[in-house]
Length: 103
Image (cartoon, rainbow, N blue to C red; front, side, top):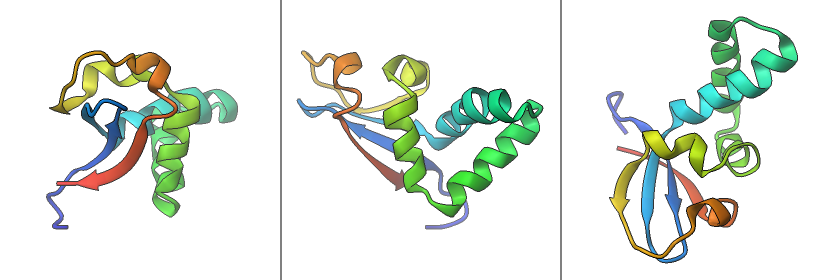
């Protein structure tokens, strides 16, 4: 991908709804909830630490999204790719397929 591409966490729910979340949302969540609270770092340092942590193993983004976040943490920042009715995104959050995409 070119340098202008953006990275997203793609979430696919059981009935086919697809949403992309900027990975910065996951990084900032991790920085605030894990790095800042445990390591007692200022938020800018916490974000830098989180960026380094995720850059060494991008699968950690998916792991943190699954285990440390929920639908309400990303709801206001999602890009809707395909929407289907009848899904309970809060209860399906952990089982929804998550991948990393760039565009």
